[in-house]
Amino acid sequence: MGLRIIDVIEWPDQGKDEIMQRVPDEGQGDIRFGSQLIVRPSQVAMFVKDGKVMDLFSEGRYTLDARNLPIISGILKLATNNKTPFPAEVYFITTKDFLDLKWGTPGDITVPDSILGMVQLKAFGNYAMSVAEPRKFIEQVVGVQGVYNTSDLQDYLRGILLSQVNGTFGATMESKSLLNLSKLMPELGPAIQAAAQPDFAEIGLTLKKVIVAQVEPSDEVKHAIAQRGALGAIGVNYMQYQAGQAMLEAAKNPGGGLAAMGAGLGAGMGIGGVMGQAVNSAIAQPLPTPGAVSAAAQPAVAADATHAALRTTKVQIQESLTKLDMRFANGEISEAAYNKLSDNLNKALAAAPDA
Image (cartoon, rainbow, N blue to C red; front, side):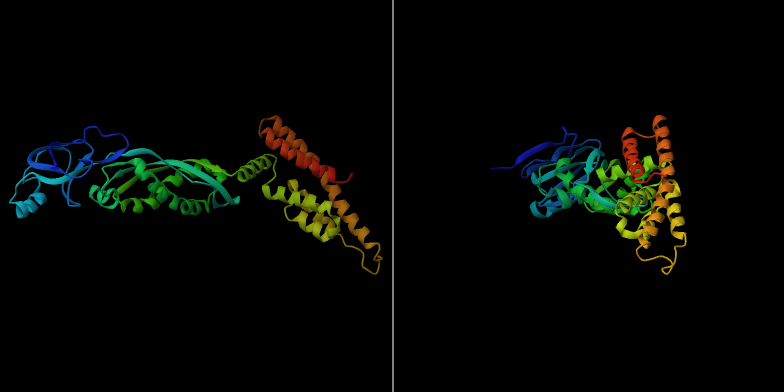
């Protein structure tokens, strides 16, 4: 069966997602001198013979002859005394920008956070790319396919981007925090773009832009962020809250002794800074020497000191509850945060003995 004679070589109906079209789309076609080649805007045409890229054409209309097909005509002159038609295929490559291509992490990634510690999050966004070196793209990626779409390439390109996401997020967030997410996100896209661009260039592409459209913390991290913000609204930082929780646990287990109680309370200075001071003050009180107090009486002395420390904090807990009510009434914290904090403070209040 003979080859098809192609008198007009063009790619007129380029789809919006098509990167490349081969003419003919299967096998080779017979091309002769005098045939018309039409290359539209944002297209490049490449003649390929025996699997090798020969002559390249940019935008324009060409009547094919030995002058504009110097490589092929040189081969033809040696092999066929410059006779045509000759078998070949033409690859049309678009050089337009492909916008709004999607990327996203398949699951949670773990990265450092300068304030919250290690956090888990998902990230999503889009990117733009184009073919910068058509010859390299054909040789490295396309091979012998007749049509090549962005869908054929997206999984590979997403893999390149995601290979850089973990490292970029980690390096950026060592000195940043999800608490400042609105300021953080504009930095992440350009950083990922710079890291991934060399891998795109290896296959003849250029990565025009990377946008981080959404960063979604895990449920645990969302809870920590909301809790930290609500605590800040009533003048208590997250470490103080954690120390207060440790105090409650220690109060439920007096068998741990006064030293354990003091360590748990004093570590975070309590709610509003008074709890730790109270316990430190209680611990600083000189206890009677072993000779002056019997062994049987010593646990009672320790219990009195602990009771004094907790009694001192009850007023402060009530003040914190009042302040929390005011913040909620003014609309400064959400109802969910108010309910959580109110519940915890009421538990602390119930655990503290009456004055």
